[in-house]
Length: 260
Image 1 (tube, rainbow, N blue to C red):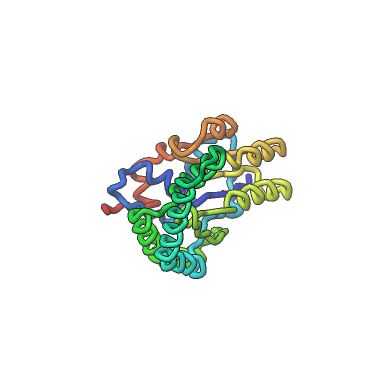
Image 2: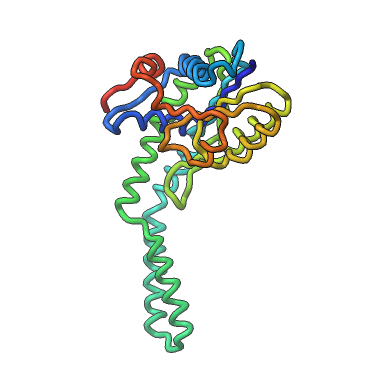
């Protein structure tokens, strides 16, 4: 029986982290995790799976890039000038509000004032952006080391999407990963590349794709932490494996847990 693993890396990390307090850092050994995962899935499916054969395991994640980090740095440098322009605009609106006699126009100006004031960047948010950039540079280096190692692992492949810096949210966001994962799950099912899809995520955006592969006769095994997945995903899965079912011995094999 042919198996394929589709793993949302960040979602899976969070699932594993749920097993420990925030005082601990969890590093997953990806050279071992997917082998242990198959072992646990085969145990769960019991007699319903014979001669399991891993075709390939895919890891989907966002990637920190120099260009997006530089975009965030440029934004941070420009913030003082933006704050001044913003302050001048608010003062002008306040003067217009005081001098305006027509009530309808006063309400319109008042609405604009509230909108502009809500967009003011506080010193706390600016500090958080500075910290976000610092973290991004550290994570970029960590990712490069991890991705280099994963390149040597058997039957394990990375699917990367550049993280996008959001001027509105002042942080790096992952976009498109769930779409790529959904497309692969369905396409590989159509090509009959697998009999069993082991899907490591709790993302409801994948619900329709998972429903579709079942109509193609594929078995859908969902792997996540109970607090990281919606009830609809669990109900739709043929089998659900909660990472809480992993023993301490299992975790000692697939991850390193260290105090922060």
